[in-house]
Image 1 (cartoon, one colour):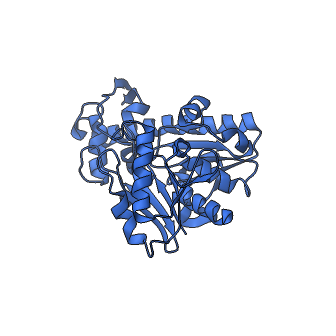
Image 2 (cartoon, rainbow, N blue to C red):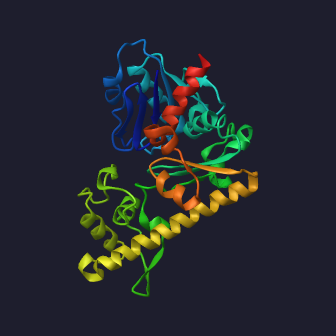
Length: 309
């Protein structure tokens, strides 16, 4: 059994050989089938699948994205089954498949963490999921999750720094930022040593290197400057202020959901788990699940499918 999570930016798989993550931006190109084919041993191989990539703007609407993803996966794994927002598996492109990846994680983890709030902080988003309110989560669309404070579009890699901070202080001077896509979340986290260059797996805004020096240059540009104008210290100040805003947004909402639901534990998964587990005094699922914590929905849907057989 293989577990597959088709996101808008990444294709994640969990198989008997481990965790495999492929950068696959669906808004540019979508070689889903060709990326999956090396993992096929037999056409009869079972696969359990979740998705969130149906929202990519290369598709006319969510249903168009669902249909594309289902057909692309089934071209490699004809017996693939898809987990939906109704908590059930489907073999066809039904609307319930939209953005059900986080629910699969919740369904799997709630047995061992019945009274916990899960923060899954990945490359693009932060999912805040009260596992002790599972029944109320069924059928919850991303629109409703945004409205409920269960979903934020901020992550460790992708995303415009200028979407998080509208102005920054450079040497004590309040400075508005450009809304151009000059620097990504990954640039801030890289220069602050929250991630390594090898973890910077998405495209850079300028399609150049993922080095510290290149990230500093990109950060300087959001205040319309060359790095020589504001110096490394100025670029680091931008990164620090981005991180402070992101940390406050995510951590404050996690604490609010904990208070609202009466949860007694916080658990964290995703590429940002080590960082946010420290901030929240939470359990880092990397230390419990190992590498699969960085591909939690793919692992979770595989385990759910196994238990359903």
